[in-house]
Length: 261
Image (cartoon, rainbow, N blue to C red; front, top):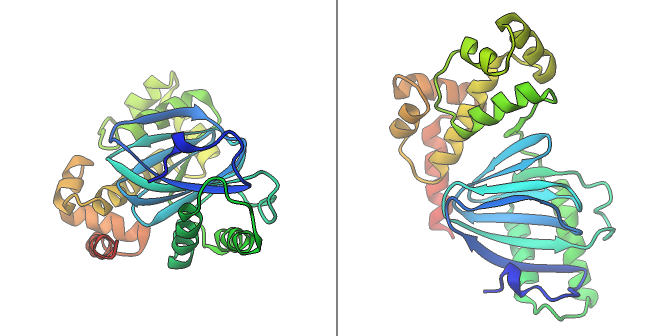
């Protein structure tokens, strides 16, 4: 398969490839001159931009505009497809960073682009495929499973630590001390910056983490225990309250996705 290293010095306006990374690989902070569409086929990855964190699993995709600084951390072995779109390509001007489910049409269009050689000319057919792909990305409903970062560097340091270890059970007094604040100041500033309390934000971190782990095959009981829940029942209640579906339904959906690959 074509991989990132195969890109020519002067690629066409729209070009794609397939790639894979080992679990634990970190693609540090960087940016591209082109917009980037990533479609994840298996595994799980965390993508951080300057103000948000996204956790993506199989069947999901992410659009990153040109020149947006980002970092990717492979939580497991990762198989994915990438399409680079030249800055200024029709329809991309107002297309913001977003995470979404990759429809069968998007997957098919990406497959067509990847199947081409890197030295093709953008003929009428390929231009139409690229334009349709951009249109479908714009139409795709945004998934809200992202975690915003606060602007205050003390709070951001705490949030990054919790995202790195979502099962951590230290109480709010501990994290206030880590931030160098009194508890009251910490809770007030967190609410002000994040629009929710610290406990609610940490619960969201855990259920987003849980969704990713379940989608990659971990058992519900194992995930609940790892994330600090006393039992699978209380975890399932919190998961359903956040996503509107039981974790078991997500697991069955994930298994179906794997069988249809």
